Amino acid sequence: METNHPKIGIRPIIDGRRKGIRESLEEKTMEMARSVACLYSENLRYMDGAPVECVIADTTIGGVTEAAACACKFAGENVCATLSVTPCWCYGSETIDMDPLLPKAIWGFNGSERPGAVYLAAALAGHNQKGLPAFGIYGKDVQDASDNTIPEDVKERLLRFARASLAVGQMKGKSYLSVGYCSMGIAGSQVDAMFLQKYLGMRTEYVESVEILRRIKLGIFDRTEFEKAMTWTRINCKEGADYNPPHLQHTREQKEQEWEFVVKMTLIIRDMMIGNPVLKEMGYEEESMGHNAIMGGFQGQRQWTDFLPNGDFSEAILNSSFDWNGIRKAFIVATENDHLNATAMLLGHLLTNTSQLFADVRTYWSPEAVERVTGIKLEGTASNGFIHLINSGSCTLDGSGQMTENGCPVMKPYWEITDEDVQRCLDATQWYPASLEYFRGGGYSSNYMSKGGMPMTMSRINMVDGLGPVLQIAEGWSVELPDKVAEVVDKRTDKTWPTTWFVPRLTNHEAFDSTYSVMANWGANHGALCYGHIGAELITLASMLRIPVCMHNVSKERIFRPTAWSSFGMDKESADFRACVTYGPLYK
Image 1 (cartoon, one colour):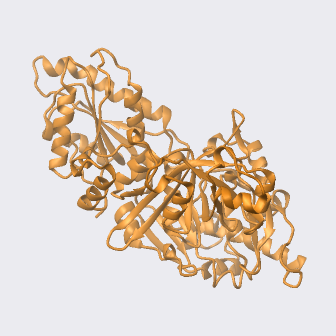
Image 2 (image 1 turned 90 degrees about the vertical axis):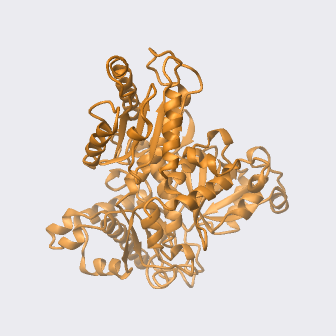
Image 3 (image 1 turned 60 degrees about the vertical axis):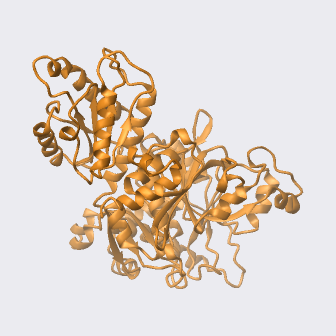
C-alpha cells in the first residue's frame, strides 16, 4: 500500500467573536468536522483499498491567522481538497481556503438558531468574486442545533465531492506511459502531453515499443515470476479454436512461443509502469524504477502486430483485478494507445475502485435489423435496440459479469473479490489464436460475453480543436439477448473477441431520444465502460478539472457543480461550457 495518500482537509469555521459567541460554538463546530471525517473513513477507500484519511485543522478557524495556520498544516499533509464546515455566521473572506489548486466545498449547517446559511452564501460569493470556485452543501431540512447527525441529502453531496476530489489527488503527479505512439491514424493515440499536464496534473512518459523487445531479448524480467506466470496461464487460460484459414494457421510450436512471448510482455509492461525491485537485484537499476504510471497505452497496430504477437493478453490481464500473483488492484492500459479513452477509464477507476472495460463502440442494432437477420423480435430492456461493444480481446476479465452479489452480476473493488469470483471469470473466458488478417504476428484474444443486468456507465474524453477536451457520458445497462440473436449477431463481427451488449437509459431529450442517437452522437470509435451509474460523479469530477460535459443522461437533480456555474446562465449544460472556458484547466 501507498504510504502518503492524498487526504481531505477539513476546516471547522467559527464566528470569531469572543466572550460568549465563539466559546458556545466550539464543540458543535469541531463535532461537525469529526463527523465528516468519520463519514469519509467509513465509506471511502483509496485505489489500494486503504480507508480514506482526513486532516482536521488544529483549531476552529475564526479569522485569517487561524486560516493561515490551517493552510500551513495542510501543506505538509498532502491534502488534495478542503471541506469547510460551519454551524453559524463567520467572517467570509477571512476564513475561506485561498489555494487555487485545491478543490473546495463548504457545508453550512441548516439550523435556525445560528445563520449557517448566511455564512455559506457569503463565503461562496467571496469564492466566486475571487475566481476560486467552490461547491456549496446545504441540507434541505432544518436541524436542531443539538443534532449532530448528517442528513442523507448532505451525506450524498459530501461523498460525491470527496470521491471526485480524491480522484484529482490520486492522479496528480503520476504519469501516462505511452508505449509506442499513434496506432493506425487514431487521433486519440496521438498523446497530448499538454492536456494531461494542464487538466490532470500528470506527466507523459514516452517509450518506444522496441523497449519491450529489448527486455525480452536480454531477459530483463523476473525469470522466477515468469515461470510462475506460465504455469498459471497454462492452467487457467483456455485456448480456443483456431478460426484462421488452414493455410495461415501457426504451428503448435509457434503458438507455444507466442504464449511465452505475451506473458513476458505482460510482466514487462507492468514493470515499465510501476517498477520492480527484482530488476535492481539483476543489475538493471534504471529499469527497476519504472515510470510512476497510473495509466498507459500500447500502440500495437500495425507496425508491432504485423511482426510480433499482439498486446491483447497483456492488456486484458493488466486491466483485470487478478493475475498469477493473485487478486490485486487493476491497471489501466489502453488498446491502441488511446490516451483519451484511457483517461475515461482512469476517471471511472478512481471513482469506483473497480476495473474498467475498454471497447470499440462498434455497431448499433435496431430492433428492425435484429428481426430481419434473426426472425426474432426484441423485448424487454433491449426492445429499442442495443449497442454492440466489442474490442480485440483487451477488456478486463472482470467485465464478464461472473462475480455475483445477492444473485446479481457485479464488478467489485479488488478487496471484495474472492478466489471463486476469479475462477468463474477465468472459466468464462477463452483465448483464441489472434485473427491473422488483423494480427499477422499472432497472439491471443480473449473472448467472453458479459452477463446482462449490470448497471454501467459508458464515457469518453474527446478533443475538439478550438474547444479543448469534452466528456461524454451514457448511463445504461448490460443486457443479455436470446441465444439465437446473440449467436447470429456476435458472429457477424469477430467471434473471437469479448462482447458486451449495452443499452443506454433514454430520456427523450437530444442525444438520448433513442439508442441510435447515442451511437450517432458518440464522439469516437472507443468508449470506456464502468460498473455502476456514476454519471453524476463524473460530472462533479469534470467540473473540478474544468472539462465540460457535452452529452449525458443524468437527471437534473443529481448534478453537482461549483456554485459559480449558476452565474453562467440558467441552462446547466451551456453554463458548464462557459464556466470551464472562463476558469481554464485546473493546472493552467
